[in-house]
Length: 422
Image (cartoon, rainbow, N blue to C red):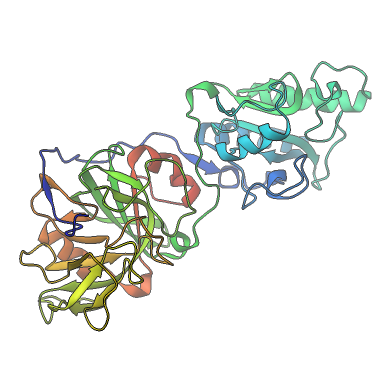
């Protein structure tokens, strides 16, 4: 095991001048069309599986699809009608559960290829009246009989007319109906959107944060990063400052923090030279000085010769900063008072901490870089002047959080987690 967990390793890299975020992201339909009714059946037991598959009732669609659905809603409101949505973006993990129940591609897409719902470009819905009551349709939602087919004729005239009205208005705004399900519509160009397995739920810590540190890299395996500091105002997020940084020598891997656990690779593991990806709190700052030479509100303590961070997964003190006193059950730990200047300014990032899972990574910090061309063993490192700015800027009362992601993932998830776009 490398005992110097965040020692910089030399390598040549180019610092990206800015994050190249995609023009679209997944957004909540009620941000685009607040009057659309939302009754996500897979967030309840009222579905053909008989269990709640989503943690929250949210309709998420790509920006263009959501804006087009808002146009459908406005057109229907002129008729004193509206929409009620039953399903929108669906994480790929849920697709596997549905396929296990109904392995029939006429009704449930094979998760090996991903579904249109997994791409955030499909919606299941119906018509409602001005009071939100569902209009008569040929079948209930998720009826897997021929009666749910669009061309099925043995239905009442009222049901047929309602089915036709829904299809005509949706088609006018770029949606294409599925032949076997009268309620299912795909947005044009759905095949151009990626299959995703991102979590549906919002993150309370982001909603409550008044300060945000966004660390972005070009891709999972990139070491160069761009960092943006934001403060929340009445008008939303305001960018305060940007700066370069370096990540782990092998880039990023999903960590354990304030975000829902994500089981896809790459995962952050002990000794893998990856920085953790996700959403994280920060705690104490440490350094070599008894007092910092600048004003600060963030809690600070001086590192002493007996202060260590335990990185032995077998230890009961794994991923904890402690004093070397009493019985020692670890075989590996790193000194917080180093012989170089890398930890002269340091902030602890709360990855894998509540409680720590052995082997999922430890001792993750913001600290001073060796230089702009050297990656780390898993931390995020900055020029000294920049990390000093961060320590001076941080305000515990504003509950700051760190979001550290590849730019493509950030672009996809920004709308889900209510993150700033820039």
